[in-house]
Image (cartoon, rainbow, N blue to C red; front, side):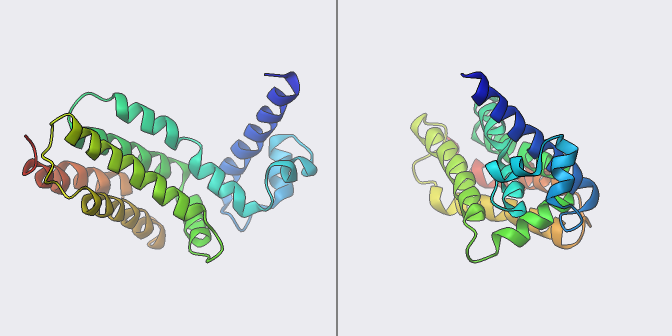
Length: 196
């Protein structure tokens, strides 16, 4: 990798880290682009090299860690329920850690008709869960009769529903505890009937 490309990646990472910190502390509406670039120690123009608008950085923050969480969940010991639970509980812990203000802004952004970031994230999560279930069928861990598409929809709906309720109620309940209860309660019980 060239020095120029390395520096560009470092600058982008600084901007994302600064935005995540400020938005978590102050809320999306209270943070201006100049605040982000000052916190990152870069010029205002640098922001526009990587992002078109402030809303785009929230999507970037939302994506920064999910790939590594997915990789870790694939390596987890245990059955298909353990792997799915690892992916969505670790994802929820990360969402909680980044702060409710970022989740609230992300929700505002994804319900906008012209914003495809939310759909892409939903499709990504569905694909991850679907692949865990497919691999479990391939390896004979669960029967072929399991309704994979329906189950994938149910799991992602539960996951997203918990995030939405947490954000809409301004943190009334602990989303990490709620998704953990779902994974090790209802989901595990449901999957038992399809286990070989």
